[in-house]
Each structure stands twice: as structure tokens, then as C-alpha cells.
Image (cartoon, rainbow, N blue to C red; front, top):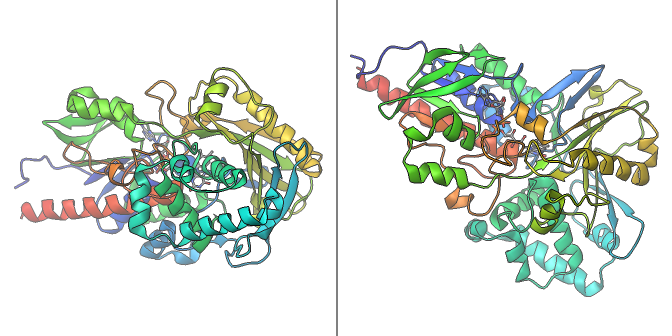
Length: 498
Ligand SMILES: Cc1cc2nc3c(=O)[nH]c(=O)nc-3n(C[C@H](O)[C@H](O)[C@H](O)COP(=O)(O)OP(=O)(O)OC[C@H]3O[C@@H](n4cnc5c(N)ncnc54)[C@H](O)[C@@H]3O)c2cc1C
């Protein structure tokens, strides 16, 4: 008996091999499910893809891992039995400088600089950079301590409050508010007046307690490469350069996908293509309740980030992470709107990773590679991205002249390229978001979209659904959740078939 369902070559089809997709596929294959993983790009990884060119191995985007220890990839690698291949870089307990920060105080023309280790128990270097009074320092310590020790239930309650609203009730200096606003841009790719306080505090706690600037030997893409390899070793079939055009839904149930014009059947479909592209484009309005479909269309995409990839003719810096900001350069909704209406700011925030200071083999011995960027809208067609690239260049020219003078080759990318390597644009202004639906208030905690869709057999996986935390970590957590769910469902279905 087949329970009214036809026999298929696959138990599950996964659409897309970003961290969420590849994790769910590999864990399901390891548990014996027959899984097809279809990826439109030439290789796995989605937005955490790493490329190798001309002796350099680099992530396409400036990126770091939070938390450094105890993250979802550790769990996945352990489950797959390949922990020795994780290759985590940067010891969070090291006292070596890990971050070089430039900050321009209000009213001053020049930036000041300081370098901090990962584990920074003493906030004095921050306070010196900001130039805040002893009383402001004391209040800053009080707030940071409150955040560090806040218990889970309290943090969860703040999922429904923006970080701006949360901080507005606190007596803190403009410098500390500015740092939080910068952090919401640089770490979460969102503005402080849209980001969920619960999510930002969770991430701050992880940074404080488990480290916040991690990466991997071979880049983040090494993780997806190993997981994809294990997926195939467990019998999974990975097809790359293969775009899923449609998810087949029949009688309210997922039945497979249309892949390069051909139907491929399976009773379970897991989409890593983004919640909005999945619902709006791959499945379509006719298969959902109107209220659900409309609610998905109203979800707010997170913001994008630019990439300026600098290839240097010599080694200039020993620090893995470079950042620069001032209280005039972080973006809230108002500054974002100003940019969207054509007002290009003179200066921008900069977040950059020096890839060979994480992994010495990521660049030829006498060269260096820096992946830098700044916050930008997620709209793949937004005007002004070129101007943002110029502003990032100018920040390097003025703040890190020794790096600027060593650049022999540059590459630029922005939301159009983010969209091309990950999710389709199916709504005006959407497609080039860094994280996806991200940590935006109203879409987190109890309001976070579930990994289970209203369509029987259709699941969402990735940063959009189910989990919490920074992009890659939350996407991988979502992959673990979905693998558990579909394995259970598959086993029940097999048991029911006798
Ligand atoms: C500039 C930038 C900086 C970032 N910085 C950080 C950081 O510092 N730390 C961090 O943790 N995260 C960071 N992120 C976010 C992180 O990369 C994402 O949150 C994460 O990759 C999302 O994973 P995902 O599983 O949701 O899928 P994605 O990475 O979005 O991958 C989706 C996959 O599905 C495929 N796909 C889509 N549609 C189809 C289709 N129709 N058919 C077949 N395949 C399809 C895509 O090609 C892609 O491979 C950053 C992202 C960007 C862009």
C-alpha cells in the first residue's frame, strides 16, 4: 500500500543549498532519506559561498561568525562525524588584537583608532575612543552588565520591541546609543529602529560570552562544501546549475518541483529559496489562503550590504577585522530614506574582514585580501550603490592609507549580486537582503515564521524561518529543525505504509 501516494525516486527535494538547505539535506540523507538537493548556482553555499581565484580564497561578502563557540555548525559537523574538518579560526579567549576600530567623535574632523582583542573584559579602550565622562562610563557598564546577564525569558519578551525603543527608556550616553546603532547595521544589517531588541541582545550576549568575530579555514564556503560532500557520501543527489521553477502542489499537498522544465516528484519539498520567493513565485497565490499570502507579502525584508574586495600586493595589517563609524554614519530609517531619495552621505560605516589574517592560506604568502562593505538597501535595482563603493574606497584612502596604497585589484558588488546568488526579487525593493526576513521586530520570537508551511509536505528552511541569531548560525539551526521534522514525518509515513 502506498497511502494514496505515488512511488517516487526521492523522499524529499531541497530547493537551494544555502546553509539552511545544505544542512537539512545532509542530515536527512544521513538518516536514510533519499534526497535531491537542487541548486541554481554552480556550487553550494548561497550567500555564504567562498570562491578561489588567482591564489586568493575569499568569501564574497564581509562576514563573521557569532557565536564563535557553540554555534550550529559545530553541532552539524559533530553529527556528520567531521568535527576535525570544521577549521574554526580565531580563538575567542586570545588577547591578541582582533578588531581595529576607527571612530569619529561628534564635532571632530578626524577618526581616532583603537585595537581590541576578541575577549574584551575591560571596556576602557572603548570609553577612551568615545571620550565619555566617568559618569557615562558607569552607566554604560551598568547597561552592558544588564544585557550580559539578562535571562532568556526577559530577552524573549524584548523580541517584540525595537532596540531603539528599548534604549530610549535607558539613561545612556549618545556614544553608547551610537555604538548600538552601528552594531545593528554592521552585525545584523538592519536599523536600530527596526531591529528586534530581543534578537540584538541575544547576539550581543553571544558575542560577550562566546566570541563574535569567527571564521573558518577555507572561508565560510568550506562549511557548505564539507556538508554538501557529506550529503553526497550519504547517498544524496546534488544538482548544481539547476533552477527550480515551480513547486508542485496538488490537492493541498506538496508533490515535487519543476526543475529545468521537468517535473521531479517527492512527497516532501523543503525550500531554501526565501519565504517570500517560495510563497509568491514558486508556489503561487492560488494554493494559499488569501490572508496568509497577503501576510507573507507584507513581511519586511532586512537590509543589504555592499562588498568592496581589495587584493593587496603586500601584507599590510595583522588584524582580522576592521571597522569604522561615527554617530553621523550609521543608518536608521530616516537616514535610509534620505539615501533612497538620492541624498548620498559623505561618509559611511565600514565593516571589513582581512581573510588571510583568519586563514594564512587564503592569500599568496606576500599578498593580502580584504573584504569590506557598508550598509545599503536590499533593492537589487537601487540607485547609488556605486556611490557607496566610492565612499568605502574613500574611507580606506583616508583611514587606512597604507592599505589603500597596496591595493592592486578591486572588485565591487551589492544587492543585485546578493540576489543573483540567493533569492529572487519577487516584491518591489526586495531580493538583495543579507539575512532575509532577518531580525526585524514583528518577525522574531513568537512572530518568527515557522518552518512548517500551511501546505502539507512543504517546509521553509534558512534564516527566514524557525530559528534565531545571526544569519549563517540561524540558517543552520533552521536546517537542523527541518531535518528533524521531515525525518519524523518520513518515518511515520513509512510505518503507515506497513
Ligand atoms: C553582505 C552579507 C554579509 C553577511 N554577513 C554575515 C555575517 O557576518 N554573519 C552571518 O552569520 N551571516 C552573514 N550574512 C548572512 C548569511 O550569509 C545568510 O543569512 C545565510 O547565508 C542565509 O542562509 P539561507 O540558508 O537562508 O540561504 P541563502 O544563503 O540565501 O541561500 C539560498 C540558496 O537557495 C538557492 N536558490 C534560490 N532559489 C532557487 C531556485 N529557484 N532553484 C534552485 N536554487 C535556488 C540560492 O542559489 C542559494 O544557494 C551575510 C550576508 C551577506 C549578503
